[in-house]
Length: 372
Ligand code: XIL
Image (cartoon, rainbow, N blue to C red; front, side, top):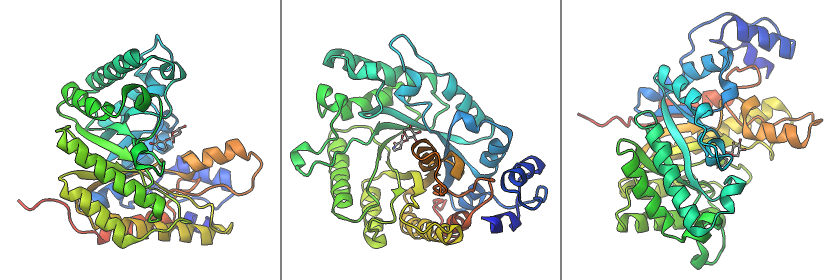
């Protein structure tokens, strides 16, 4: 980690001082001109960005997003739990702040997410079928109307596929699946198109990067779902693949690229929507661990970016300190000496080997800007 501090750094005195304080490290030099990943990716027609939360709206983190990101995904503020957390509440406040920040720096916004069986506000889970159906419709209409013209892409449906081995029960269970039935998917996409015809509509799914039987099940079911939605003329524009990569599970680059090409052949754009790399199966030593995480990023992205349909790569937060894994670790093991390092920037907001691995994968990928 110390080696990172000797690397060139673009962040100015404030971040440098913070890094020095936090790590007792040598002074950090003032601003310089490392290219951001958005610039490296942008030359080839790829959008790079990260999830963002309201606690990232501070000078140091904002500087990092402005330098690195061409696209952001509000991590939780646009979920139903972020907007309708009580029956009499419709609160776009936190999401508005994030969207305003993004647009004022010419970043695009991925809206995440409108319809999801998980993380429903408790009161919503208790509604009867008719009321739940009405609420889901209203939520899509009002939320998309509020952000019309400001949110370019919407994960209309999140994680619709289930893990039950029985193909008859292939949809992820939950209040929406159970009370509205399998028709909820087509219904949601139709409502979404009406609510904001200018937004591109995505279905976002997890686990497909695994090449074991479990991952294969998700791949097969996702292709089947696309086929069924297209057969029903549902307005589907793209597929989000989350990419929470677990290095202790098998990953076969060839079959992953083939899977992405299968999606591409169905005329859909692909976004890698929630990329991070779990380091739990790697050694404690930080230099070794960071190197291994970087190799996983490189290997994964090289396979993903072979598909020219991949038009955006979004990591699930920008820095280790803000990552999902880090925060779970603080919560569950407050005294642990080892903390997860799943992202591209360390605790001092300095680029890690994984940043360089992602940059290298972007430098090597083929151009996805269509010939005129
Ligand atoms: C997670 C967030 O990172 C957490 O802060 C929150 O408590 C729960 O949700 N798949 C998704 C994301 O689609 O919305 C999830 O985000 C991670 C898994």
